[in-house]
Length: 606
Image (cartoon, rainbow, N blue to C red; front, side, top):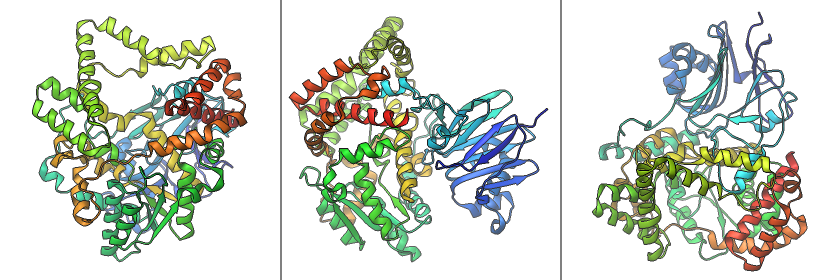
């Protein structure tokens, strides 16, 4: 009987590949620091482990002679697949245990490190942090996932493990893959508030440790190289910059370099705040005008070039500009760039709290919630009232009532409405259309969520595929630029607290992001951060679309690859495009950009 083994192969595509199957062999790779062996098995660690000294002490090993992979191997010997509950960091860990005949592959709690797998033509299981490495492996089918592309055009993402390749799956954040003779299964190991269990709400006393947790997250990331920070004028990146400055001064390490984009639209120009924060903290500021970051090419042409070489279609259209900003930081010695990403997910209150407050009859808190949105976002009073009272209040409650009165009929109604969201010009191929209709069942969210509408929405930060895709995209940007992008608000210890923070405390003092707003307002008293409303680049992005999309559509000659693959109806898409170009509506122009982006990616990867 052949022994099941774990092996890695160097490959021209970026990223290692770990292979598990029924053939004999051994674990090998040119970079031996990633790999550890023992009579019991082998381990591979890509990423960084935090508090290594504490972990080594618990495992009673000598840290001076123990690499990360060896620590993981010792941790697996102690705790088995539960080792990820005891190991902190940003990582992809693969462990082969010979005694159990079992492979375990673990993605870090929030998914800052990607992890993918595919089944090879001869039955082996291949694992990597790189989609490109997998699809370029000769044993892996590189066929495009037509259904995923079509659903993407309709803004539906039903499966957290799905990628744009049929054969490649992702291990979602906070999950582990276990493969043995019984098969392959993926399960969640990390959860700040497990579904079906009472929520252990963070207390006010616990929230007093928030600043310390954020400082710890920042310190962990600054330890990985010379730091920079993408500094906008928003509260999230400002709070990270302030924490990083404090950490650097305490530890007598270099201050981070502030890297900022200057947008020409007055609605999203934050230069006054960016300069004011950098000056107050004593940071060297590299502020690049947007036009200089994209040069004469505009934004969308380099974005299409970028998406053609990406392992997945681009999500963040601003990536070319931020890539240039990151390059300038790298030329100045920056090795790690921190961002404020995650602040919007974990520091703010979901508007779906309205439905829960209405259901409980808590009118006082509902009034406070509506007022906080009015103070915190640049929205008209009418829009705030309509959104909070109807869209996120009465409507979900009405759906819940209908579900209880006639669950079968209401389910069929919701399913039919969701199926109708498939764009009229998507899926002319009947087989693909039937597949999309079948997938909508898994895209439905519960009408009567057990933990309430608020927690159902907050949970999206952990489970929604777009969360993984966005983190994977910025990780891939870092891999290309030889930089590390790090996000303190995606640190597991920070999220564990913020996820459980009562919404009334997140909105304390009647404005969003109270946990950081008050502290940064005191630190920068002349910048008006105590009254700052969320700044969005909507109008500027609309102007980019209006200026660049028409010529790009003419140059492309449509979306021939999507049409040939039966994903898009060419005639119907052209009619939509003509109407959208005549109206110049943002929604229509965005749809055209979605088509161009998807066609460029599919054409380059089919």
